Length: 229
Image (tube, rainbow, N blue to C red; front, side):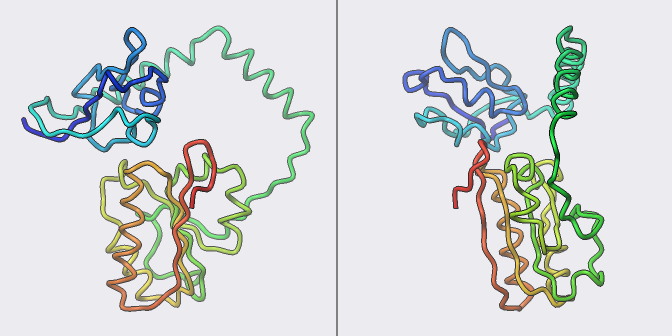
């Protein structure tokens, strides 16, 4: 089949391995100090690896390639997780981590004020939406940014999702929430990776379709946990 797939320029590649780390599907590997697309059927064509490359050695192309095999990717991920779980050093790492925590005064508390938080599960009408400052966040952003609760969740109603994994357009659900409730503002927190553009676009579409003029902003988090914008 003809589909969009990544292309790696070996001449530009400096062998840093950032793209292989960024590719959650495991499609990219390092061979003789260069990045190589090891499994075409593992490449979903969404390009998480593109922003990770510091020398712009990765691009998209349309060409004949096998279809993306999600089942095979998940099976490979499960096998890798099983290998890590059986690593002889894993238990000692857990023990050391527990000991460290025993000596640490954990003073950070959850700022979450409602449940559920998944966009797919949250009701369209709920009392907590009345007068709410809405936070719509990519679910992995909370893991990347260390002080996420205090800097973003605090004093907001939180909705999270991943347009890549959910494979849905959140626009209709968000439109209904904004149109049917007295939402005061919307903050979007996304990661720098291209697939996160889906959650930003869904909010933008929802605001337009709701017919309301509500202040909104977009905050972008880098993969190393820094605020980019």
